[in-house]
Length: 276
Ligand code: HEC
Ligand code: HEC
Image (cartoon, rainbow, N blue to C red; front, side, top):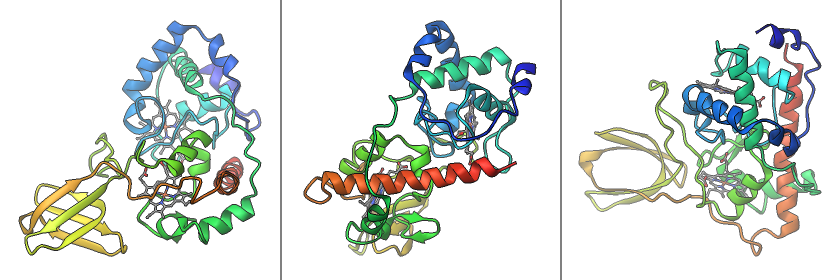
């Protein structure tokens, strides 16, 4: 613990993506130890591969809201992030270092230069590409898709590209039941219900139990059904988000949108750096 505290008050500024060479420097056995400690203590929120779950962000993107040096990550892990769900963890120093080595080993190569124009990206997002009809950014926008205010800080560019070009490939993990601390996140999939009266409604499931189902329909109205009134409930395991191939969003337009999303993440990181 003493080491972490001694290194603690180094500058908390933004750190660029970590060179993959550092990951290779850590021995495979240390990484394996870190993976196993991570599975036990962290995976319920951050996902088994640290790619993010319903309750915790992706820890492999190379974007660190709370600082990306070993000392800063050490501090985040041992002290937690007050005011959020990220708990303080009473682990041995060596375990924490092994977890950090594991996280480094999962990091993708440094962000490719995107080179898009964030202002044009924002126009596309809010305008002709229609993203804002489904996605909220800073409290404005639709509710069918996940809030993207922090997505640039939480996800790698490669993940963002895939989410836009091929949304069905890896569905965002949806909300977990807040009363079930370690409940598995539900995927954000498309649900179709057919009522006994023959009405067909498509949307995103908000809450579902044995007897009832709440659906945010594609027109963004919230519909509540009793299961006894439903003839069919189909989880389609595919995204409600349309795919955006090159014909819908050219490569340069995609770069603009990515630049916008990543800029959002950067503003967040700077705000986080101001925190005490
Ligand atoms: C109960 C859920 C939960 C558990 C368990 C949990 N975390 Fe977190 N973690 C979070 C949340 C939520 C955040 C985001 C905090 C914020 O809003 O900045 C976070 C943030 C972090 C960050 C900061 C990321 C950044 O961008 O700087 C690190 C590092 C981290 N967690 C590592 C771990 C490790 C390692 C473990 C296991 C020892 C762990 N977490 C266990 C929920 C959790
Ligand atoms: C018809 C509604 C709709 C539209 C329009 C839409 N999305 Fe989505 N989006 C969703 C839904 C639902 C999800 C969650 C399921 C999934 O992973 O695809 C999602 C997921 C995402 C994700 C993944 C978020 C994460 O954290 O995993 C990104 C990034 C994203 N959308 C960006 C965009 C962008 C950029 C546009 C415009 C070019 C757009 N979306 C247009 C509904 C939409």
